[in-house]
Image (tube, rainbow, N blue to C red; front, side, top):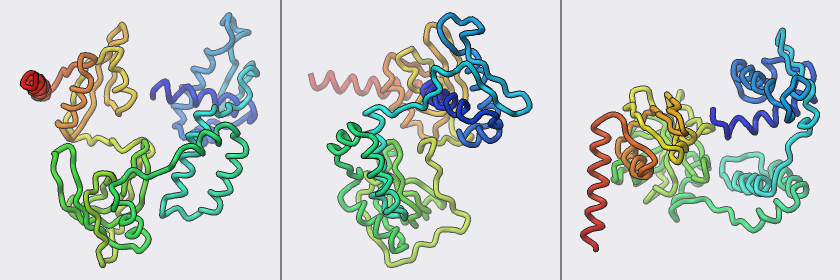
Length: 317
């Protein structure tokens, strides 16, 4: 769990516990989407926080004996967090984008939520009103996907796969449209892969709605994207990287199996990926802020790609 994820949660957790004295560990863990162990880890960290001075009287007092959480001496941060202008405007943009999704059924309720939020957020609403919400897609992709979802029809796609730099034909039974990190994806049953797959709309070169009813297998489940679209498999290749302080963002951005601090801000991480081409591009992007430790074949591929790029610069000059 990254610090960027944990700090906002702690700042929200303390006001909640202050306003719900005697809340139970299982109940609070469920509300915050944590395991009970993760919640206890957070409470142990809260117990060491407080005002400058760091004497027992300055620190937050929290206990969870018997599963009942009691917190005291935290009045200075008992007030719930308020959204800043950037946060309020980002949330409003996201709500408006959600309203554009074809499968969203509670449109009237969402419209009322947006109106109330605009009224409450003030300057944030003014900023968000200057943003045009558009789905990132090739011109014919979104209308075709919307029609297929609305009518329950199969799609025929020509889809660009950047990892292999190729265009592949696909027949897909659409299941839902999702937005992750500002990108729009169709989640559906792919007959080529014989599995549920995510397809980025801006990589759909052509979209044709077939006169065939969409009929994904009964056990097909749309992809879970709350933690991002990057989900490595245990069978994917394990890669070790050494990162400088400027390259530590990799551990924050991608799921890592191992993270080891090496001192002075350097770290060693191990992650999995099924596409070595993607790993080569990641290594090139890191430049001198990262180094491939293993496998040797990846290090050689990165070296060859970097040499090829440098040679092209020389030929142009």
